[in-house]
Image: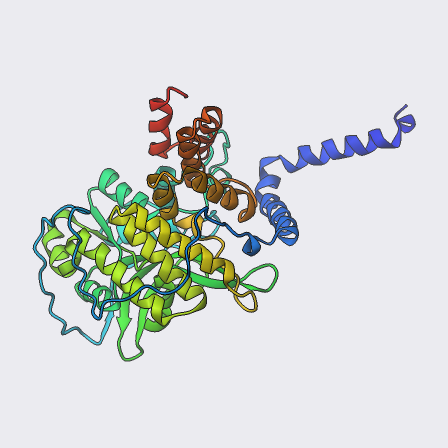
Length: 436
């Protein structure tokens, strides 16, 4: 009887059997990444993500801005709160070599997009916290609730934001954390020399599936430095492993692409020491203005991807200063330069909106809602194999709601929560809109 079944039916039975075998947990966990890689390769072959261009509705010229002669970093009036802390001068005489003891290396392997949890685990373990990387991930990148396999559930979450790590420390541990933009090499050396390792978010370049060099975001844990070698000692959770030495220049080049942001974890009883080490960076308004002036200066000195990052950083700093209209036009300039970047050696940094959402803030708070939607569409549909960036979905939902497209807004906000049930801004808006 079976021999008489038509060929198409045999093919259908075979496909169903293969799907069933593939979904057996032990097999799925081993093969799913290969299937996803194949799907991504096919999509990117026909639609190269670095060729996707976002065009703002009001593009601006790409000529450099005029730069003041020095970096004064004086906060502008009426844009940010008055500083509440008095900056303290930090001594500059430091040891030539520092390599902190008590660092337990944690990698990000056998997990998806785990550099955030792995680095934060090292920082907390250094101070005596007893948890592990999965404890952190369950809070800040829990993944899709309906997927029972914890590892696979978190696969779609591509990034953890610095504020999510800071909030985890301040809300779910006995320790304290803070972040600032506009850091520099000497500030990191001061912290490390005083016994405080630091997490930084950086960009780096790596050959992709085509052999071209592509930009990605990455956290690193700075636990030492060697002035004789002009290098930091970092714990790299991915390729380079523990106690990896990276030159100050190369470190700074990668750090630039995230506006020189850093995160410090510390016991609450040592808050005064941290404040003294921060010096002028105690005042967030000062740090934001300082970061802006660094980026303005770098725009005139750099070219290519680095100049793009310098302009983008200006927008990020302006958003932090809540100067949204200026930020929006600055991001316009950054995206205009992005469209002009060459393709010979290094791809455009097409993943940047995976990690940094400043343009959404700027365009939304400038009432440029269609630009929010267009940027989200470009990011979700053209730069990634699946539309699983909760931040892009979140901002698209807010812009859709502002334009009166309520059904689309509800759907996007619900998808945001499905992808990350702990993303509290999305649950807030679903409740506010009575759209749960």
